[in-house]
Image: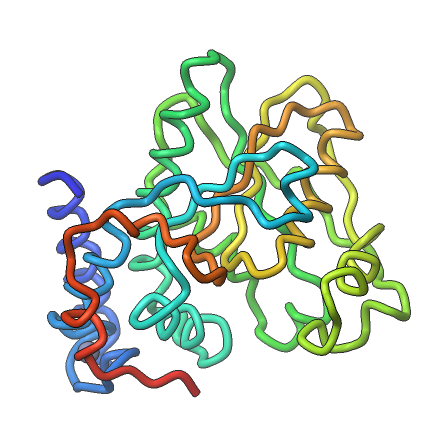
Length: 255
Ligand SMILES: [Zn+2]
C-alpha cells in the first residue's frame, strides 16, 4: 500500500472510531472498530491484492479472479463479524480493503479502454431479510473507485428454486452450481464492460453464474473481484515478505 492508501486507511479507521465507540471486531479490545494491532495485521494480509487462480467452475469462463487477501485471520474475522455479527461499522474498513483489489483489477483491465462497471453479486431476499442489509453493496459503496469506473446494479436476484433453499454449505460443487443456476438476471448491461464484485469466493459457483448471466445479456466480463478467497494456496499475498508466524500470533475469534 502506498502512502496515500495508508493515510486513507488511518482516516477511515479514525472516522469510524469517533462515530461508534465499540470494541475491536477481532480481539474485542475496547475503544475501536479494529484496534491498532488488528488493523495493522489486516493491512499486512491485504497489502498485495492481485490475481489468484480461478476455481475449476470459473476456469471454463476464462475469467480473471482478483482478491484482496486470503480468507483467514483478521480478514476472515472481519468478514464474519460484518456479515453475521452485526458489525456494520466494519464497512468503511472493508471498503478500504476492497479498494486495493479494485485498483488492481482496473489496472489489468484498464489498458483495454472502456469504462468498467463494478457489478455486485446480489443478495437473496432471504439473506437480506436475515441481515437487513446487503453486505457486498455496502462494502462496495464505501470503496474508493478507480478513475473511469462506476458501480452498477447490473444483477438482480430472482426467486430461488426449491434446490436453492438447502443450506449451501451442505451441497457439493455440482449441486451448488445447479442451485445457483437461474438465481439472477442481468439488467441494462448490453455493450458494457462489467467486473463482478463479491465478498468471499469459495467454490466459485456464484461468480460463474454471475459471469454467464452478464455475458448472455451482452456484457463483456473480464473477471471477478473478491475481498477474500478461501482456496488454500491461492493467496494473492503469497509472495509477501510478511512472515506467517507474525500473522498467526494475533488473537482472533471465528464464531
Ligand atoms: Zn484487535
